[in-house]
Length: 220
Image (cartoon, rainbow, N blue to C red; front, top):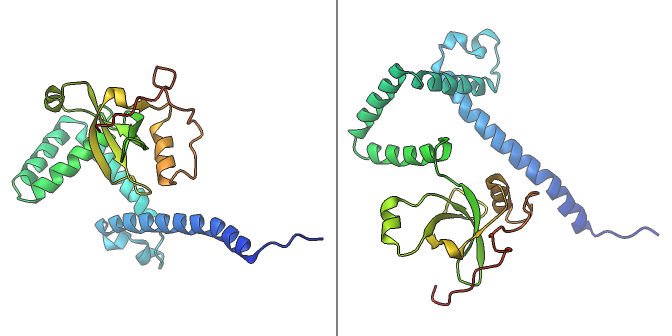
């Protein structure tokens, strides 16, 4: 006898196959379409519509990568650094633009600079109440803030799920956090998937005290 399988199971199985595929294709199409806008920088005679008769998607991705690469090469020498400082000086004199640019630049410098302090470790912190735990990323405590705190604290960024680009920034006592034996990439994967996809290298907490949890402070 054949086991009767509910129609709902077939629908769920189909969704599990198609939803990730469609979303992936949608994101790729959005990225390629956005990068293809860089083709507008080229003379119209060089566009594929003029000498092939059709638009070839993806050429903008190559052009964008080349622009970013040669911008980095230019900014690495003395002349390029002077041009960057001049451009930043111009933007610094424009109201509103100055605020937006400086904020975005500080974040990008922290995230992409090899000497930055962004997301150095994955931690467990008590949030949003003393009986709950949340994954967090250790960042950098400013010296002036550390001088005002009576005990040693760590700066943590607690991302939201499933969009980790938003979150909360706190200063937490070092003794109240648990350092995880988990890479930042694995933690991001865990957060984005809302815990459905467990990171492979999540071997558990590493606190230096036999993974003993810090006591609950009722005053928090």
